[in-house]
Length: 142
Image 1 (spheres, rainbow, N blue to C red):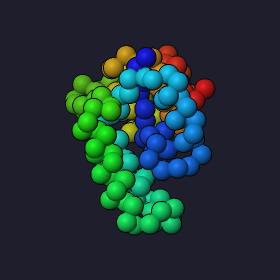
Image 2 (image 1 turned 180 degrees about the vertical axis):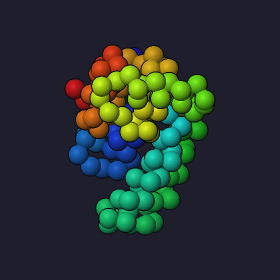
Image 3 (image 1 turned 30 degrees about the horizontal axis):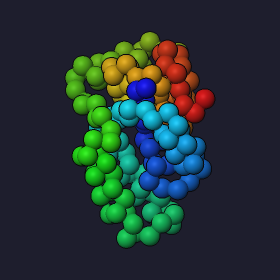
Image 4 (image 1 turned 90 degrees about the vertical axis):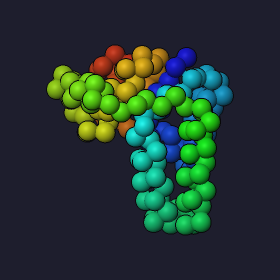
């Protein structure tokens, strides 16, 4: 099985929060080949920084988290979808075609998943989940 994992789900792999156990169980049970967009590195850094500023973990953990992400991305834990002009056009087409509104980065994630012909789209964002369903993708969590 090939699964696209967006940042809203991926962050729970690195920071213990609601959804972390469910993600771990899914990854162990389904053992999907994970696909992520190049955007995840930037978005994870933003999410980690926000959580640190909110006092969810100490500043010293921030660099450790980013090193872990970089290690996972470089070691092949995820197939990364390269952002290019064609993918941006597909994202624009989705924004125009779907009835469900899409934020810019969400449209890029969805276009990335569709370009890779994934079996499941993993997101904790309900609006993005509805858009993925409208686009014909199975979603997790359901």
